[in-house]
Length: 272
Image (cartoon, rainbow, N blue to C red; front, side, top):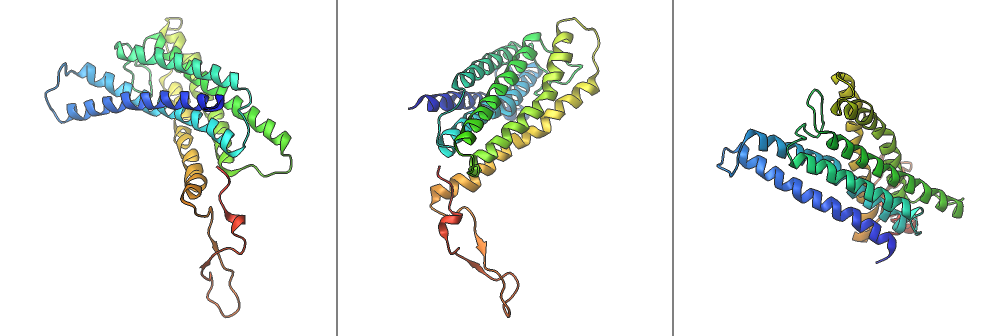
């Protein structure tokens, strides 16, 4: 296993652990909703599990998995090492510390505010500090992606960007822009408020800033999923990346019929 592979695997293992805990919380919620008798069943425990499930599944699992997959696309589609690998590891540890702070606060019963952390519900300050660190760690990943692409572009000035990395790079840029909203909400509004430095907060402004990030969070999943579906899976299956349609000729029906391209290599999947 190379050093780049270790960086990718470390992120993916954290994502898997978060997914496992979140899945356990979801099962507990389902059993509770079914009105089954469970040990320590209470409304407090139920909403604690809802928050843990939402944060770990929607934020932690998503962020760590996509970061790990992003490093894979650098080594597999650009065929080069990760540039600024140290920055990547720094982002990993910052995000991991933030995840641990947030998860510990939730499990201690001091952060039951759901994954949207809407005010006027207030969590303990470590919940918001941990969320901010998770975002900062993901920014390190974005900057490592940008540095790797710039290094590759210097080496291949005339080459087209491989499609898998093109999708991941678009994801990284989207994430950098989208997380500005939640960073402002947490750092400017929620942390001072939870520390008692400010006594009031604007819930509508906070929710607007959260969903500045929340809606693009969906595309944080979709763009890498498209990259896998259209570039990785065809290669694994031994198929072609695109199909083509024969052009209409006089006397033929519009649209023609599907045919194999005259140059199969032109439509074959990029090396992965």
